[in-house]
Length: 379
Image (cartoon, rainbow, N blue to C red):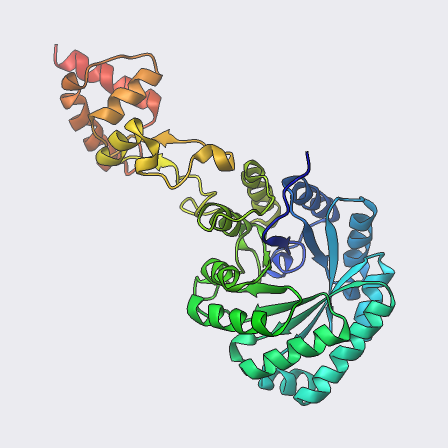
């Protein structure tokens, strides 16, 4: 059976942007494991790093190329010919070439004007294409760029033979509305796919990425757990789940593989997943409040946007200060203790006092012990 063609291509850059998070450094073995897990999850493209760095970076990229993974491996490059040559020398057949698009960055980083910058990019695209490479071109700092210049930039690289045009909100200042307008304008002017790379400085990376897809972007870039510079970028799990379950789009990703992947990257990066992190946090399918628990026990969809099994997680009824008798009855039953709800009032009072005293939840074993203690006291 042929796999469905994805409506949106998910590209992961954990091994490049993710490793640029302060203090994060993956070993070659970890990079190989992450790349394999990404490929096994169905990620169709991986940005594997910056070959021009050389040394261990180049060695790791060459090892990744040698794995023969069923996914497109892409090298990241500055708008410098030697960078592109370094990517090709690693055996990569796909390159991304990045250049700022805002006037202040073009002037301050490259000491050139708009037209000189475009001429340089045209030459680099021509060189990479002459070497048989698939070429993505990136416009950095689009939040500060002149929208008309971005159109000119996109048209220029398309004419030069580029296969894709990336918009990078380098310092995370766009919002979903401005993102939608910007992407929509470019989609109307060029035929090559538009990709977005959204930073999370205002907590809008996922929202901006979804807005870009609504506007016509066909490629999006993410990292596992949102790793990246400063506040990171859009997270793989959130983007995949939003595109599939909110927009109804095909992304060709195995969602059950998401949680193990996120947990592995959390350990390898030394960046734990927050308990309340959407999609993959330990507590997002935990229910304590009495009203919520009673509802979930009747129909999980009343208080869950999707089933935990979709992402390889599980639901848990937690006993604490806000629990009701439905929760007590359910958890006791899982421990082999069956009691009618009408007899659980004294236990509920004791549970609440203990939760306040200890400032933590009550484990199933503790609950059974409290039940027996309460039973003895009320005999």
